[in-house]
Image (cartoon, rainbow, N blue to C red; front, side, top):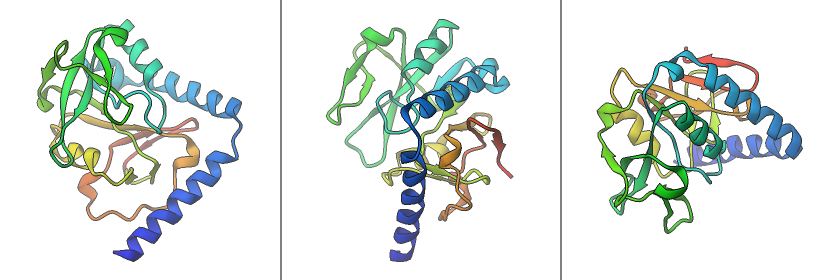
Length: 195
């Protein structure tokens, strides 16, 4: 267990070092490339119900993506975190500025009183956050297992996609099980299909 933890810490420090070497301008330029690639990505264009992680996360920012996706009439589904260990409920938002409220962790999430609850089976494409990835679809998050659990519950037909800076791609991520992998990773230099 300790070996896995130290492996995770070394991967995260490697990624942090690479990210810290980038200037804010470089990060913005890379972000713009990733965002453009997502909006040209066939699976994304064909999807109707898009799951995204909340804006304000430490991963690639999603506010702009959510706003743009709503402009092209995608249904945007965001999580509402619950007190039950590693679980959240999914809600569809209709208006970015009116439907989101800050939760206890200062993250924006749908207001259940304004938004419609959505079943996992209705999600066409899920944009899954992460801090580091490998080319086999392995991902490393904050370790709270929210998204690992979500990946296993999404329908087979749902594409699980990650957005990442190329600096977040590492040689290998140690994972208990490959059932927690994403299908596709869009970076600023390539699109990685799980091998």
